[in-house]
Length: 145
View 1 (tube, rainbow, N blue to C red):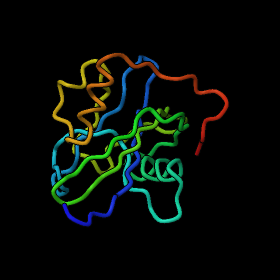
View 2: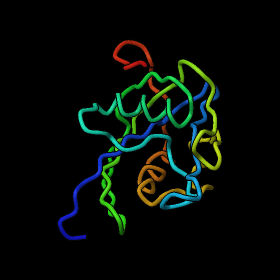
View 3: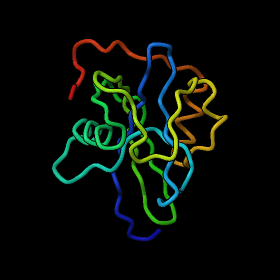
View 4: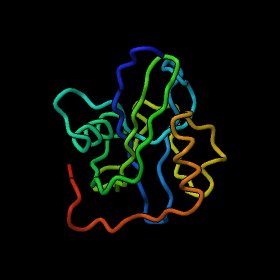
């Protein structure tokens, strides 16, 4: 992809009390339809990563988050765009996830994510998580909204 502009995308590794993570199935009308992904979206001009993640999860899931530390960053070339994806640990502090945009939502065991057909940008993340991942302490230093 010559002269590609990088699209910054943020995603949330949202943990529940049972140690599962929230995953979302992309809607049928979008690129990479029906593939699974972590909730999130594109960073808009003037937004921090945390602000973008809070906005996207409020718009697409109807929840408020506490955003914790960065878990992983990957860059992936798609035929139509070059994505730099930042995945942050997060937990829900208000609301219950609702399917406002996605085809489906699921709470998944982080060690079993390879059972789902994920977007290609998430491949390295899934492989890293399969080696073991646990939620961080969501105390001081979390960004809430």
